[in-house]
Length: 406
Ligand code: GLV
Ligand code: MN
Ligand code: MN
Image (cartoon, rainbow, N blue to C red; front, side, top):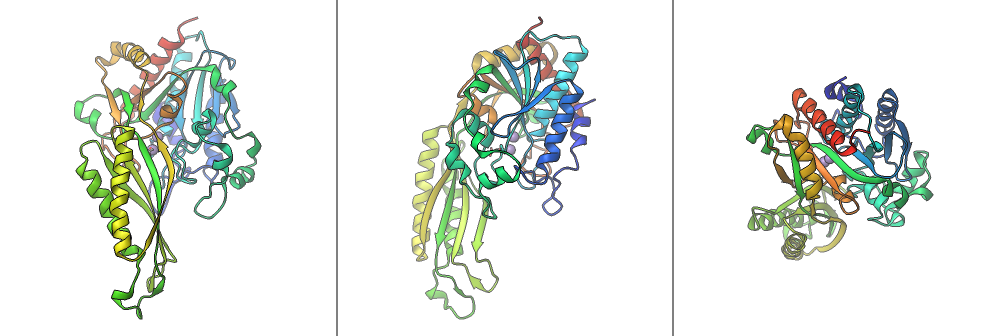
């Protein structure tokens, strides 16, 4: 088997005919077939599968126990996402274990392959849902009350999937078994392509916040309402979009600001909207930078909203602090990669990952695999077959180094 062959097995699951690419969200129609694939992949390697109370999957090589090395990623996607963000880390983990088994390697400690639930937060607005619940980084009760776009609560979706919401929450015992976590991930930029390298380590994840902006105005008739008598939240939204961009631009090179999702209520061609809801994603080099960027942006948005006679409500959906990956672990893995790959750089990323959440609890590292397009969160996201295989070899070498021969 190859990594590409493993990914081919899930290539038809969760395809999005309308947007292109994949839309795979927690407990939607893609969820069960993806979990079934995980179980089949584990069974073929004689790994014992368990699902924790937070809907995260674990496949164990060796009895679950203290000092384990865990590796993996997620199987969900953004709406219309690529094939590699998430699944590459899970497929590579199975492939790395297959290689180690073939080579006769016997680990001196348990190794687990993980697939964490709803990393993108696309359905319920909470990124890294599975790892945040597992680590207790969010309150289970609050998260279970969140609603998806159709109004279904997470608690209801949890029950509908046949799971028990009572089991949701921190699991210190399970987490306590894991000594180290490594996430392999497709690079979400062109750094490795430009450097001519197949793999790198990650040095850090920049912090990021997501806010929901609700701009309320006066719904009205598009034909009978004079232009100077309107309180049109869509006009205010246009000001908000520009404010996000202008503030991020003024704080370059570290800052990024995006409005990637909007909803207009009621949403009719001949109707002035009564509400515009926009989801704002801000990122920068430090936590304080993000907070400051937020304050400046919201001040500008408020000006645009008030100029239109509308009102603004701002709700923080999540905040993810900066993560600097464990330097000792990163150095140990880098040393394990050097015989095959030569000098391996450690590069920062602007993308969030479950490894970042786990880094608050245990030594954690990431391996990136070259992405020739540099595009991510879109169907054009890519990774060449030979680079996927290089990534699996890199992960196998890392596990070999960390799990030592018995
Ligand atoms: C996840 O990929 C994120 O960075 O939002
Ligand atoms: Mn992603
Ligand atoms: Mn990802």
